[in-house]
Amino acid sequence: MGGVRCSSSRCPDMNTNRNVANHYSQGDLLQRLNSALIEDGVDPAHPQVETLAPYDQFHGRGLEATEEIVAAIQVTSTDHLLDIGSGIGGPARTMALRFGCRVTGIDLTPEFCEVARHLTRLMGLDSRIDFELGDALAMPFTDGTFDGAYSMNVSMNIADKTALYAEIRRVVKPGGWLMLSELAKGPGEPLDYPTPWAASADTSFLSTPAETRRGLEAAGFEVVQFRETAAEAKAFGARSRAMVERGEKPPHRAVQLIHGEIAALAMKNSARGVAEARIIPLEILCRKRPC
Ligand SMILES: C[S@@+](CC[C@H](N)C(=O)[O-])C[C@H]1O[C@@H](n2cnc3c(N)ncnc32)[C@H](O)[C@@H]1O
Image (cartoon, rainbow, N blue to C red; front, side, top):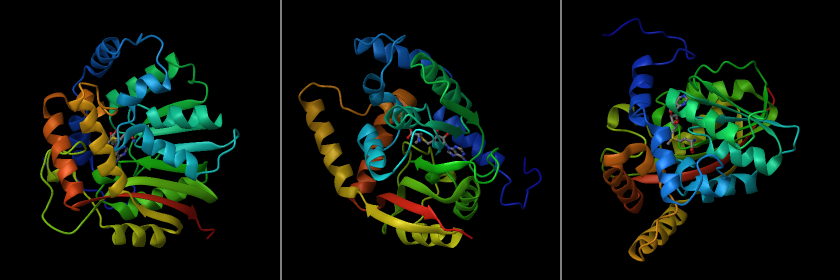
């Protein structure tokens, strides 16, 4: 217990990381994914973006939110993108297919990295996408490696946002972009747990929108676009509930896949947080200022 605490901003918090990875991992994700695909009438050996999207876009509004990032950024086929907290790789595969670019994902949950690599191989994208097991606070990349970086629903697990933004800034080229699709803290009561990203408040670290903007600017990013997307989240929730009432599957089934028994409560807590403005979904586009 306890152990030696590292004071460096690039030293990962091993306890938090272990608890975060445990929250996301039950050990049999690939079997459960394959069963879900078979139930959908999809051959697990030949997955495609659309057939995987209900499961591999593990963030609010799923593929719809990823498409908004695609629409907001300018990427060429020679660019190299970084996906911070890449999960099982849905966003990375979307980017690689849309732009023909190279993508590197980094994630601290080993099972997610394994499943991400497997699905990417099956889709024939492994020459352009790789997944590293690691911590966003201490990334194994040299300075200025990436033309752009994005992160979807990850920073809620990271307490030290100053270190996170500094580390992202370090690995992005001067003038490069960063796009965040995140959940921020609204006014009002603390959140109820579990949520899709945390079993308890011990691994949940939401900043307010104002803190988020200030943190990015202090780290050396120019904020180009800063958008609250609660209305979109509520509309997506209403559409999903209507589909379920009609006896159809909802478009986003990643939380059920990954969290099994606690999924329903986690989604209910998160939807109530958004409805009561205790959670504020954000989409932020920034550019790295030259020094
Ligand atoms: C809600 S999931 C989102 C996954 C993916 N971005 C997506 O949208 O499909 C959050 C992810 O962040 C990862 N994560 C949390 N803290 C991290 C950290 N410090 N470094 C790297 N990955 C982290 C988790 O392992 C998990 O895969």
